[in-house]
Structures are given as structure tokens and as C-alpha cells.
Length: 204
Length: 154
Image (cartoon, rainbow over all chains, first blue to last red; front, side):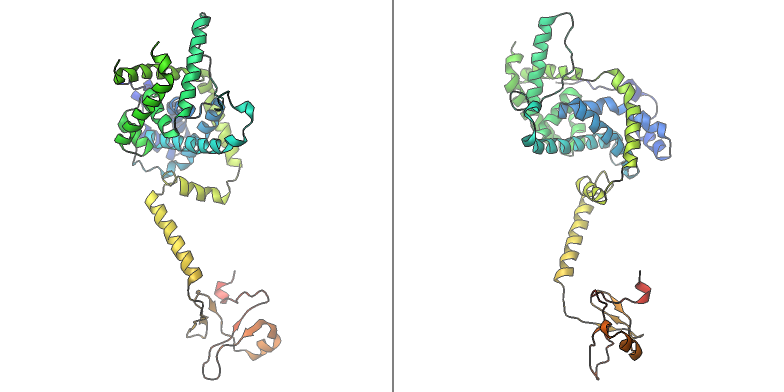
């Protein structure tokens, strides 16, 4: 299925990412602010769908932009800035998830839901004027997040980048440093797993 | 329903997750929050090992190609092993000016001054060689540290 690419309007005009990187390196800090504005939404999405926690996502997003800023002099333009910063975000998120997994043994019961999974932050996306629909939507959202958290971090990443963010297979392969074939097979496996756990909602 | 159609239904469901975003106000404030975060980070000194961990874990971010990192690590390991397992025999070489070079690359000044030996006999631990082999004595201080060529003192 073709997924529409989500591109903010400001990416289609104005200086390119690489021009902004060059300006930043020449001391124009406003250029880096512009890069942050361009990527904050998408990187937030990637990190959030991997961690399922808004507070952790906020901390990680700061870390990612800070890390990218400090490492900018070493950015040689072999890949696009877009790929490079996505890789930083994914790498940081993976490190965080590994730490969280190790920590889970020491987690308080208050941090876990009834199935033993870390509690997730869910924004209220329910329609205010339809309580029944809101209940169903909330239930669906919970189940969706629960199923996502059961996937391995690599599988969750491909689902996030492909299905939620709308990146192409080739772009995902560059970001994750693997082949397109690997991306496709991970995606297929992840879809099958999600379908298995969300089947009841898909048949409604 | 085919499997492909099933996946497209699933993908529609996954599109719901696009709604899980903190909203415009958060992103409007993010830049200021980030600048405050950076100021805090600058004030905190990163420990020396943090850079090492970074280079080993994220060499491509630190600007080091992964292969170069592996090669450098392997070279360090080999050099380390060679240093500790290397010959321990005290093979020395005498320089023209009377100084002695030891296997570990330490240059020791030649001391022929009898008065110095008499004044500080406790500093003289060994006197290599005899009448036929003229190798100046090595001398150590009270902490077993070799005395260095004055040019190497710090």
C-alpha cells in the first residue's frame, strides 16, 4: 500500500537541510533553530512510538538535538542530514529501551499495567461529543499501544517509520543501516504480529 | 479478505497513532526549552570515559568510521598484549654520550661521578657489568622509579 509522505511545507521551500547545516557550522545559530523546527515533530513521533512515554520522549528529543549539534562538525554529508539525525534519534531510543528493559526488574508495580507492560501515556484523542465512540477509541488505542510494545524495538521502528511516518523502504534502510530486504521482511513480520493481536478490531 | 487487504486495514488503524502528538504549544515552546537544556548541559562537565563510550558505541556520530574504530581497538589490544608479554630480559644499549637505552624506551643518564655515589649510596641499586663490560649503573630512587634523562623530566 502506498503511504503518503508527510512533508511540512517549509521543507519544500527555503534553504535545504545541508545549507542550514553549513550556516550553523559558520556560526549562524538561527540556522540550527530552523533545523530543530523542521525535525522536532517527526523526531518526536519516532521517539514517542518507540518509548510510548511523553516525558521520556521529551528528554530524549533534547538529547538528540544536543548530540547532533555537538557532532555537527563531524557530519561529512555522506548521508543526508535527515538520515543522520534520524539515526541518532533511533540509536538513542534503542539505548534508552535497553536500559529501561534492564531496569524493569526493579520497577515498582505502579509503573506497570495489569499485563506487566510499562504504562504508556496516551493523549486524549477521544471525540468530546460522543462518549461511546470515545470509549471504543480509547480501548483501541490502548490495545494498539500494547501490541506495539510487544514487538521488538527493530520491528517497532520499521512500523513507526513506514506506517506512521510514511517513509519509503529505501529511506528506512538508510536510517536503520540495513538492506531494503531486511526492512521488508521486518515489516512483514511486524504486520503479521500486529494483525494477530489486533485481529478482533480489524474484523469489526 | 486477502492478507494484503488485511494489512491495509491494519495500516489504517496504525494511522491513528499519528494523533498521539503533544500539540502545537509543546512544539512552540520546545526551542526555548532546548536552549535552556543546552545551557545546563554546558555547565556539566562530561567525564572522560563518556567520550570513549561514545566513540565505541556511536563511531559514526563521533565522525569515526566503524571499521577504523575496530582496527584502532584491535591495534591497541595487540600493543597492550605485546607490551606485557614482551621480553623481560634487561637488554640495554649504550649511547655515544654514555646514556643507556632500556627495552621500554627509557633513557637513563650515565653516572660516573664517584662523589655522587658516595653522597647518595641508597640511590644506587645495581651496577651492571664488570671491569670488561663498561655499562654505567642504573639507579633508582626510593620508590623504584628509574631516573630519567633530564630532557625527559616533567
